[in-house]
Image 1 (cartoon, chains in turn green, cyan):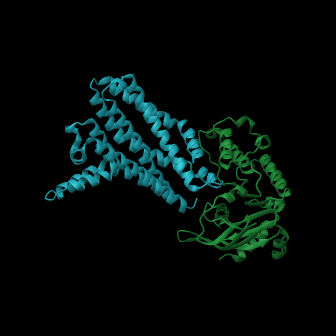
Image 2 (cartoon, rainbow over the protein chains, first blue to last red):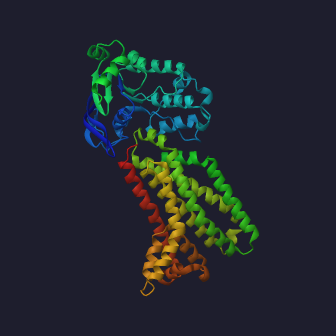
Image 3 (cartoon, rainbow over the protein chains, first blue to last red):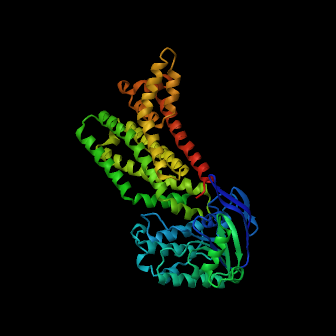
Length: 235
Length: 260
């Protein structure tokens, strides 16, 4: 269970998150949506502890995350930008992350799935952007954690890898995990997500299921529904 | 922390820049030793190179390394680790790889020249110590500065200015101060000001070891007068350690309050 109460975040004078209250307890897929700069990444980074909140509390499984790090054993995180140390090789990177987490995991299935077997001994600086994103995926899905936090996971993925991503996410959902992700691809949200959290200028303007958002706006397309909500709540 | 030291060391020791840094010291040291028959002169030449170049390279490399590994640092911080362990580990791996390149680069030619059988062995060891001290202290300053400033150009600019200030401007400013206050006793002031600059401290440390009065300069002579050679070196070493510890402490503080 992730509980966020009265969360405020500023970058300098810029009020990025405004009084965020969220309870994420029910297993399933949560899509955090919103225009660029609406605070989606900052919200995810606050949960993972990369960003220090100005005000408010975040707790994971009932324990406040402020100043602690052990709770991250429960979370897998996939960052938006995949950049790794230039001179390490792919298998060294995977081994490093396993060592850091002090956790055994078998990457072979994911390596096969994303078809990076031939790249496993290559230095990371020699990989293309797409392959780096696949390596990022492997690291993100490597550990069996109850929570998965994915920041724009579909960026620079080719259609084949995108299909594989969908498959993994659906499997994780069936295993009863909580998956929170941000994206701009609306058909992915329609296909996969159980819950939608819509952010605008740092505020939550909608939370609920797909049916709720269609019901609230009277629209049958998610893209239209979101546009309507953003227009209605915007300046 | 050991895991982070290991990964950043393994990453950096394979980098072209680290290898180039090693080759540079190898070539320069060999050339100096080859062209000069007098070991004292060679050591003084090496000292001048070490005092200018190591701070500059450590500052530039420190800032580049932080900014280049910015996104990966974010990924590592999302794992169950302490910020302190990660930041200190990355920095130590960086300082260690710089120190090893430098040490290997200058030691190989000196060994071939027979330094272990020479009376100049202690002087050579002092140069090594000063070079390693400067690699650690200047890269710590660069790392803390880069952590503080998300804007690369600003972080780089400030780091380079710190190098320019400590390596070039500082001595001139001390001289101006001493001339302005020539009516007053300024010995203690000069000693305190030397403590405040790791590059000056390293110079004094090597000079005290070499014991060449003509090259010692004003502050070196003062150190000798106040502390004697051995205590002078010991105090300089302690101060260089402070120059590593204080920026490292600041680094951890900045990292703990930072949004990644």
